[in-house]
Length: 465
Image 1 (tube, rainbow, N blue to C red):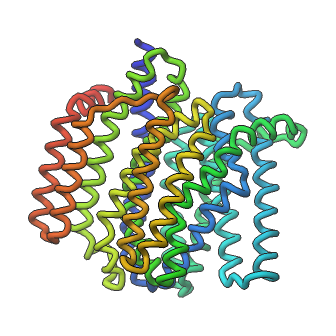
Image 2: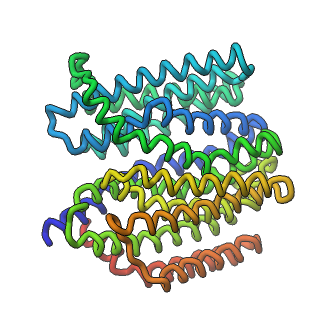
Image 3: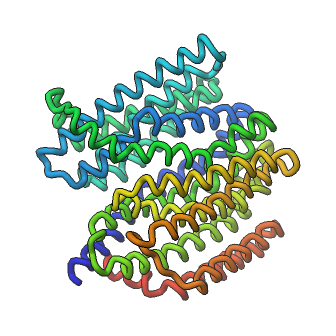
């Protein structure tokens, strides 16, 4: 019991550490939105978002998802073997990145003239570096370094964005160069703290270790592609049917929804570690279900409050050129909220090495999303895209809940789910009234409901400080 309490406290502590760094980063990113939307047209922002979208699908393919393996195996290995794992992960990354650059240039020169190819290559390379170095910090249990790196990356990113957009009059390319420069600053910071380069050795490159890493991560590749088919392929459909400007509008709706992703992802970082520790506990079903009960209510709270706060601050944060995105925000945020609940089960696939099952559940959602997007985009425009993604995320959640019952059984009461749905619909009804007074009252009501149903968790959090 004491060991369980210790692990539970560690879950709360790690979530708090991750949250502090990530929350500050996201708030600063939102704060600069008025400047970004003023300096960039919807077409230019849509182009930048397309580069991000392509990178998000290319990265897991060309890194062979070994970045995920890095955390799984380095975290559990003894110190003397951590360097060997990291060396082989870096080897896979270098090979994969070289392949990405060569293939991208061949496509650009011989097949299709991709006007933003160089921006794509730059963004991809530095995205890989950022992902890998942050995984290194986590896998070496340097959680404070990980959290601070997020803040450092954000501060430097915003500084470089301001300089490049304001003084050099750059547009979408300014955002990409600013990102690359901020990653350099962040990686230097992480390396000075963890000194991971000292752990690397060319002699540690072993075919056996590489096979072990890829054997674990290979099923994650189609899963990531499928997840991209749910979360990001709609951007390509939007560009193809509605144009870059519409993609810029939809991307801005997702920008606000990313607040939910920020909070839930910081929890998932600590949750992943907790499940790895407790996966063989005979009482794991009771433990995991207890966490899920509070998690479901917290996601509902964040989504509901997020919707209401958007109504209050939208006109302050966003340039009038992006106003259309206002109408899609609640639908997008609910979709992201459902996605966050489905992602809760990802730690189970990860801990029990059932990653192939994760792929099957995600591919079902991807097929549904792509089909619905194609069928609805012409008649319903961006509304059709937003609804399609939300329904796909719901299907993934249901599929994952049933597919992992044997290893990662989560029990929850229907009344808790119904309460979450009621609170969400209450928030949406207030949002579309577009009345600040109603929104403030709605925020107060949602907070009271949350405190009433989670008072034990709240008291425990403060007692453990």
